[in-house]
Amino acid sequence: MQFAPLRLGKVEIGMPAVQAALSGYSDLAMRTVAREHGAPYALNEVVLDELVLQKGKLQRRILSVPEHDHPVGGQLMGSEPHTFGRAAREMVDAGYDVVDVNFGCPVNKVLGRHRGGWLLQAPDIALAMVDAVLQAVAGDVPVTVKMRRGSDDSPAAEARFWTILEGAIARGITAATVHPRTVAQKYVGPSRWPFLAKVKAHVGAFPILGSGDLFSAFDVLAMLRETNVDGVTVARGCIGNPFVFGQIRELLAGRPALRPTMAMVRAALARHWQLAVPFYGDARRALPHARMHAIKYGQYHRDPLWARERLVTMRGPETWDPLVDEVFADRFDDGRARELTAADAIVPALQSCSE
Image 1 (tube, rainbow, N blue to C red):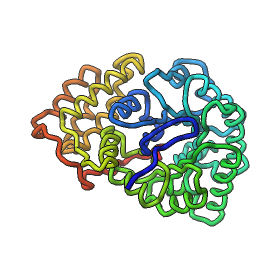
Image 2: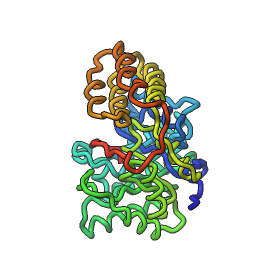
Image 3: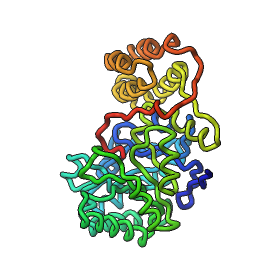
Image 4: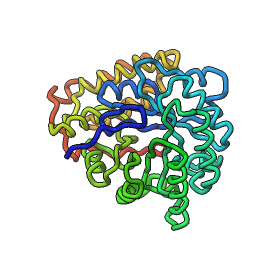
């Protein structure tokens, strides 16, 4: 089955599978490694509008978009339209290719501040946020939105979902990503893919990207086939697994996808570390971020629990190379990349604004 190349307005994406915005994870290092393994487009970590506007090191990091990090989407979260619009403009001026509006984060502290998924309860405010971004961006880049299928399972919540989606489309957004769990569900229970098919049938040619329960390349192709969405955003399934994008490309081309060897895992982590150190300023600051990723790469070890137990002991930059070399040593495989199977998919335990 053939799938059309993905396009977001004037931004050509290509392969219809991209890296999602991952709170606490999708920094420049992760995005770059994902691109080098086949991701055609990536989104930054979701950021608060007020942090984009607050002068300092964090603002400079958020607004740093090097030449090799394109196309890149900047995902914003906030609660006040005026501030939201100003932050969107800052991201465009910094070089982001797309501005993505987060109406999906289900984390309690976010909901308590009337951000993210809370806005699905308030169509007037949500659409005012969309208006503010569209006016500030002024057509310079595409504007997209990220939504869950409602605040809860009630008919009133679903009605509000349609009000926001249809209103945002009428105002001029370029595409929408839909995660078919409710905000109340968080990450409990299956993602309702039939709802994605319903959304796509409802909006016709308007681009819809699907999200939720994409833990392997096989899941990606299944969602594309079963729901008719125009593309997918891989979230938890690509943490510690940039290889998934190359695997998707192989399956789309009708070729078998391969599971990475220990040598390939070491190379990916070495590249991640090489990128993380200058991004965070020094090795000491980079270590907590890189360690989180290294632990996730442990899913490819034949003994993932042991790998995790060893990797969590990283305490200083000097421990990075020895532990990575120990855990992902060649002795744990035969050096040959074997064919990937659906059984290789691992569901990560992650509770953040990642889908």
